[in-house]
Length: 261
Image 1 (cartoon, rainbow, N blue to C red):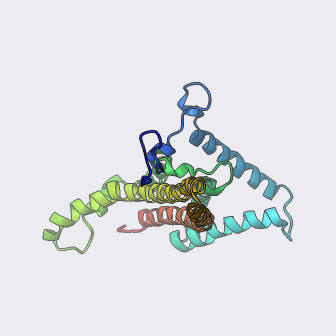
Image 2: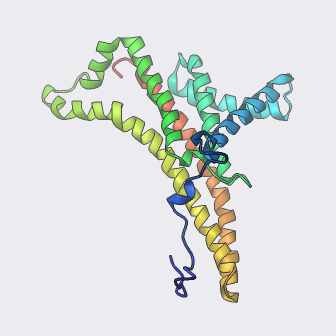
């Protein structure tokens, strides 16, 4: 989208793109000192501090922090643990709770003033979280059923006519070992990337329009208003994506535990 009045010296509006998701090192040339990496570390500090504060003075009648902490934990334990995994859910609650909180905080960074960058819009971070889920549910399946039976149940689903295995077996192998991890990480990444890019378009577009003529200034105010409205919409998406990622992880764990998974 280039302004009609663009010239070699005035290129007009330059739309945001993938370049706006790349950050140089804050200090030196270390890749561990970029904004996304620092935000990952900050999210761990925030989550740890909140949980320590919420559980420091436990009471029968909880205070605000304890109530908030218990609310999140209860949501994960009951809705994503007990109702999805079943009787063996308790030992997986710490993993699910950690995944949910970690993704949620890093997603919400995208609408926090001065930070305004969802770290899950960098593909490496969703992939890293996915690896924990991926390794966990395969390990659980092998531990419970044995390697041979686990792989046999994946490749040869019981009760299926043998000729169907020619088509079904490759599909099941791709589903368990390729499609599931790819979709788990790419869904989170794509939503955070697209949502942040959309906010950048309206924010940068509003800034550009306000610096133009009178009519453009009015449109610029509208563009900024859209950016604010989309921020609230994006908050819902950020929470939903954290929930979906954790829910799918719970479903995959439940499938690995099930007989004839």
